[in-house]
Each structure stands twice: as structure tokens, then as C-alpha cells.
Length: 175
Image 1: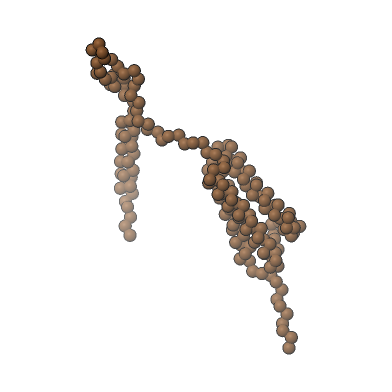
Image 2: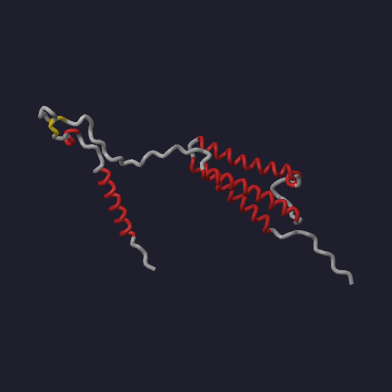
């Protein structure tokens, strides 16, 4: 396997940056004296154009403002809800196999409606935290809240399914 020398990468980068600055400087507005056209009007008198010739836009067009309920966030919030539903199912499965929940009290996880409400509240809290980051202009963190929530909850659900059952051993057969 051959490696690209660092000097060659640096040379390429400097050349690229140099070409970009030359290209950008070629797109600036020219002074009026240089843009004056020699157009005789009806009296044979030369006149300057009424406005300078606009330069080609060197900046990318402004992006539309980011809305909170865009397609990406909708998918991320659906992922959070799905991960929480998977956590609910995996915890109930783990309890049915004789294991104990260590993070939540038994009164919560053994009450179906209460535990489902807790999972729904966790989904709502995740969306709420994302909205706070959206309103404060932290759009990248807004999305990462959901990504981390999906990852942590998904890991917990997979862990619950991977735990061994703790059912008592069956009694030995009678002779």
C-alpha cells in the first residue's frame, strides 16, 4: 500500500486555495470608470451606464431558515418513539424472564399504564430538549439529542434482550 506524501497534499491544498482566491477576486465589481461603455446616444454624446455592472455572486445563496418539524427531525423523533417502545417491550420481556429492573422502582415497571406513560414522557422530554436547542440556534445539537437518545435507549433494549433468564431450575424428574 502506498501513502500519499504530506508535501503533495499540502501543495494540492495551497494550489486549490490560491485558485479559489484568484477566482473570487475576478468576480468583484469593477469601478464605474472601467465599466463605462462607449455607447453614443441619439445626440452622438458618450454616456456612462446608469448603474454599475453587477458582479457574479461569490457567496452561496442564503439557505431557507431551518424549521423545527422538518423531515429529518420527524424521522429522528419517530426513531426516539420507536426506541422507547422497544425499551418498554424489552423491559417487560426481561421482567417476565425473572430478571429485575435496576434503574426504575418495581412499582413503575410492573404497572403497564404507568410504565407506558413514563416512556411517552421520555419521548416528549427528548422532543422538548431538541426544541430548546432549536430556539437557541443550536441546530446541530438539536439533532444530536435525538441521535444520542436513540443510541442509548437502543443499547439498553438490546442489553435487556441479551440477559440470561433467571427462572428457577426445573425439578429433577421423579425416579
